[in-house]
Length: 395
Length: 164
Image (cartoon, one colour):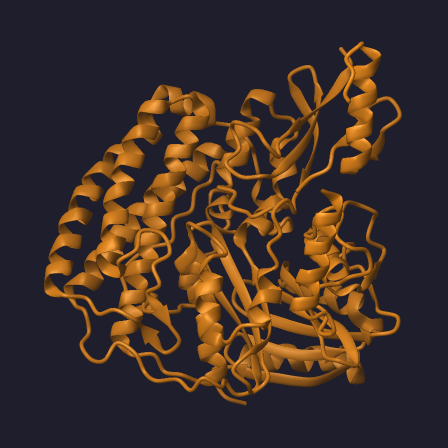
């Protein structure tokens, strides 16, 4: 059977965001894969240079609809480092609560998406129903479900009340119970096991070489987590452990995520029991002294890294954002190769891709190994000619 | 030498012994952070040395425009300490060497350097743009300081109107 090439995306029912994979198939088996990104470049880094530090908080928060708190905390962490601001203990505690709620929200969302890709819609409905509970917690705390607007330079913007603590504790208790059920589903349900075990293999040495981060790396036995390796907020004062797994496949990535969710509940419970008192933020001047800093943050998908350079005015000189998905994409072609077409979607979903990415068509000649790229105009002409030959005319 | 930054100071000492004056302006602001400027000629050797010594992870490459010079910061880490290595190049003819032979993950980061700053990367294989979309005005590198936001918006809006 001859080899053929199938484009997966950028618009594809199984992909949640615009991304393109060129899969070369030999029968049902994938023999080569390339990832194409850049479909939705919004120019946020340029925009950030033209806004002041406070406006940038709200801009950076919109880098992502799921890890909004992650990006903004990472940016603020770098700014606070340059300005040498000491953040009050209560602000650190509240930031940690929101960060962990966000992780639970993201992991439950992922489990639902993964179940959906496997055709296991019951689990999808279950997890997304329970995810609403986390979103309710976030709404209760911040007033918003997605872009929380909790952070500001020097602290947080909202305090927490006794009633909120009680309500969140109640919801966390419920979620804990539900998640222990999901742990059973993920580790015991035959349908789930059959579709995930030995799929999308990423051995430890390859994960290291290709710079995998977050749950993708941890499921390949790479013991990294910024929360422990370089603690920020109050992670060094909490009792929790980094979850790693050794199976190096999609199953491992699912196990790591559900177990991490359990750790997040543990952390939130510890913080809610002893919330520090005092003012929630310190005043920071609008002008940030000249300097530069790099801040690392463990987002739900892995290490997020921001670089900020200030020039002594109220506008930053440069803001650079590197989201974890870009790092994880490097290892994806490896995971896809030698796998089957039917498993491609779950393998892609397993790194939990989250990106903002506009495309052109690529034609790949298997026999010659040549690649031709069409731009929009050429492609339009080609399609008109193609249909004309078939007797259909466009006027 | 403070106790907190022994590891960082040690690393800088070893690098200085090996590469001498090609390393300048070393700053260790706190634990786990090292900043340095290096000469482009030693870039690949230095990165090879770092990789052999546990610094296997290239987090990202940040391009920058300082007015007279362009450059890039390579953020290299062993997951504890981040080395931020700055390499500068002239604005008239900005060229940097590709680090793909040491860090195979650098492709998209290096494409970003060209798209956003117009820094040519020697040794980077041909490929599609990243992250700028197809049809973006040629020769415009949006993150350069001389590109003003208003002019950029005007240019992009006029272009899309013409195309329609």
